[in-house]
Every structure is written in C-alpha cells, then in structure tokens.
Image (cartoon, rainbow, N blue to C red):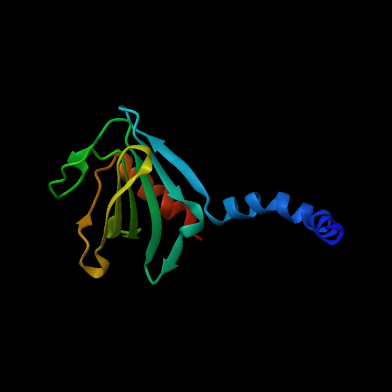
Length: 142
C-alpha cells in the first residue's frame, strides 16, 4: 500500500497534465457562426498540406435540426456533421472525403467514407462554408 501511495505521489504531476495533453491533440477552433446560430469549427491540429491541397476536419454544429444539409434523404433529425475534406486553395473547390452525421447529444447516426468519390463543392463567396475554406487556406499559407 505504501509503494502504491509513493507511486501515485510520484506521478501526480503527470496525471494532472494528462487532460491538457489530450486536449492539445485536437484543437477545435470556431471559425464562424451564421445568422441562424449554426457554428462552423475546424480541427486546427488536423490541417495537412498534400500537393496543392489542404486536408482537414470540420464540424458543423446546427442549432436546430438541419437535414437539408445532406444530399441524401435522412429520417432522424441531424444536429451536426463532421467532415473530412480536401480543398484546392487556388480554386476554393473542396472534396468531401468522410462524413459523420450526429443526432441530439452528439449521438452518431451514420458514417460515410467517400474517399476519391466524394462530392465536389465550391462554396459561394460570403457563405459560412467559404469562410471556413478561406480560414483553412490562410492557416497553411506560407
């Protein structure tokens, strides 16, 4: 028992730092919020430049259910989506690579892996999606 207590005291500083280390692995940054209160976040630590593209994770947190966002018919109310995308920063054309659909309380409803077959989009200037692309591209410019 004494040895266990000694070990706990020895490693206590490391145990206190563990949550900080975990939170630094994924750095979600809110990039913008639209007029209806939907939030658009980017995982800062996921940004990677490959060839002429930036790859990243984005999370869209919908204040109200937003099934209209999806290109497919979906029965359950959608309160959020997490997307893995690649974007050409010159043309501002993004390809959806992976998609996770969330219900209330961040319950995972469905996951899709599109790979090279994901849909292409070019968000309109001034839109929240375009603001995210501009942010992502500005973070990797250099």
